Image (tube, rainbow, N blue to C red; front, side, top):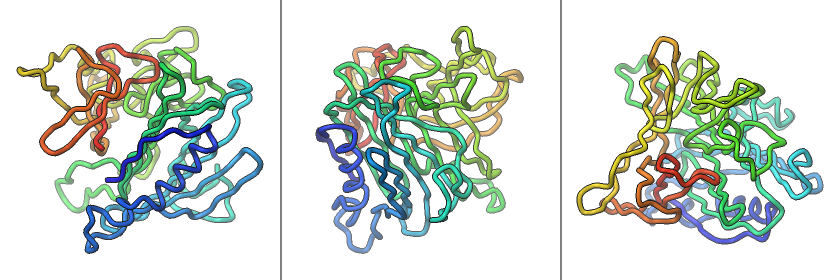
Length: 331
């Protein structure tokens, strides 16, 4: 696992540092200091620069150099969100064609997954292996934005015929362009681990299903006039235990006390899809890699939690610091 925490001078420098990190970090090139383990470094398939705008086409090798994972980014100023606003729009795809545009890549998710930024210095945290990368950006003193791009850890199939070969998950803070990082909307500004929805998008996260289609994910939605916990649409996926879905058992877990001795219980973040109107999530895809739910009781951003030999860093969701708004990411 590769990890980096530093400060970028602005959004463009953040992207430049990410390019260097994901392709050349020593812990990706030589995982665990073991030359017998294939490189986890990602490859730049194409880079298109037009002034302040950039498109970056990446492929990940998997952790055994036996996979090809396609993730693309469109980066640049977002005038609709403000003169100081930038957007980092991440899309998953199933292949790469150098002659196709960003939105026309093979099997691309048709909907934006946006990490909003501003034209200021930004502290960042990068986490990566050969299967996925995670970005956390501290946009202001009180606002953190995020992206997860790559494979989840799928559940073991009951038979080879039910194998899930391409469990690609793309999640970010917002599900559309033109929204400002300072937004305090429940349905518009969330996180990759607790996605959001409004009437013009299919959510700020999506999973490429075992049926080879993109399925939008949202724990919070808007019906155009007010916001609610999964009031609409009737078919939607979510992430447990963050989901607070009316009609699907209210999976959300907020009030778990720390364990005896003060330690925290970490729980896998599961990606599911189903019909709230029939009271269940019928498809359960897997869990986010290296990401865990934990209670927000007596919690604060940038706390570190040690479980066995693993260290997790605690982050808040956007501007929120309530009991259900924290996540732990393994270094």
